[in-house]
Amino acid sequence: MVAVVGVTVAIFWMTWTLVYEAISSILRPFALNYLLAGVWYLGGTLSVYIVRKPGAAIFGELTAAAVEMTLTHWGFIALLWGLVQGIAVEFVFFLLGYREWGKMPFLVAGALAGVAAFALDYFFYSYQNLANWYIIAGIVNSAIGGAIGSGLLAVLIGRALESTGALDTVKTGRK
Image (cartoon, rainbow, N blue to C red; front, top):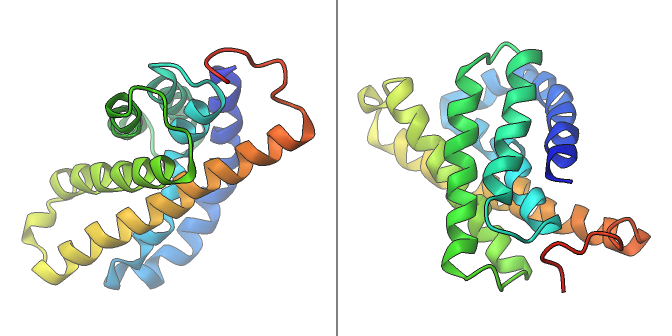
């Protein structure tokens, strides 16, 4: 089930990459592009929403990143970002003992994944040379974008799937 979610999310990312690339250059000078980056953590949040078990977020994010790696210009480096983002999401649910499934844990997980992804960007793209205001704006916008584009979106998609009965047969970890 998690692999299916990961592949499905990666296919969605294909379209999102086109949208992001088209408008990110306008937003990047103000670090507003990070508001749009949250959907790239959806592989982890949606996977753990559906399969409420340890490892689901990491496996879902890595699966999506592996597919993305082959279909976009991001290449192999997508796996590193996927791993870090998946660990960040997983960490939140680990701290909660895999027992809390309301909206707030998903918002926090998405926000943490955003901050983790920004940390990778900081080192990978040498952000230490940028102005402090840009770094702070990037962190804040990454957290907001992650909370909404990954956390809230996972809850909305998950609840929509539940309402259709599509998750009725998914017993693993669900109450």
